[in-house]
Image (cartoon, rainbow, N blue to C red; front, side, top):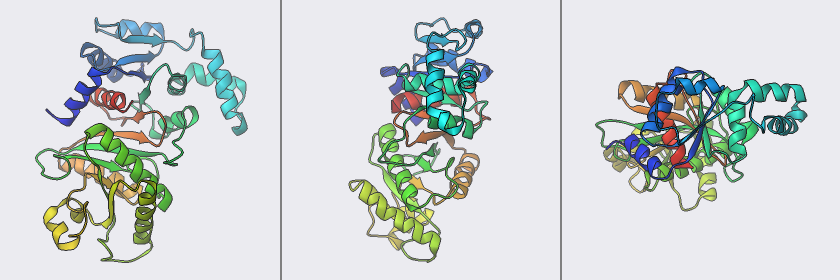
Length: 327
């Protein structure tokens, strides 16, 4: 059974309610049918009442359709949203319009008020749109102090990672995180990996240097981040700085970093900046034919997931399953 099949099975054993706000996308409707037919999660679909006519599943007991135009709490949500955003110049009229027209924002408010445990969006919204909804409606974890975007990578036919499963971060949010932010990304990534995979995270802070083999400001940032992450989570298995082969290949690790409990065994890879993270996950996805699920947004007190606008209905199903397991 693949890792993603395990996530669907685990989600089905403890149903959580997930918001899908992109009811105008046919991939969302296809995913809704699959999720309901297979009992993966309870769903709130945001959209007009006519959305129900598009859903083919007969198993509607775990489905709720909420139309902001007729929902009894929409005005209350608009007032609250105005209070949250008035310091940024938002008017009450703009807040009302957001509740009626920006379904991703409305979905975030449903999670904020406890009607659902998390939301999944991004099929027809950009990553900034989804992050903006999460930032405006959800709370940031004070310990972590930074939001980031990770990918679960399931790589076929490889002995590396956790039977081919890795978590890559940050691959979607922070262009050039400082050392404190990089430490927060490492800690939140380890927590997420352990929550999903159920084994100890072994976190590698990646660089073009392995344990002092090169020097420079970019290496210094990674080593400083390593020290800060160890302060934040002293029980976490984390080490660096590592070149990628030192992090995941045991034979290379023995030559370069033999004293490390992470080198050659890493299953969580923390990239020094967004260039490295984004390039690496897409190369792995295309060249190694890996499944890439994410960005899974980290650093919030409640789970939410972004999607690639090129996603399939299957990707939406997997993102819902993972978000439900996170909850």
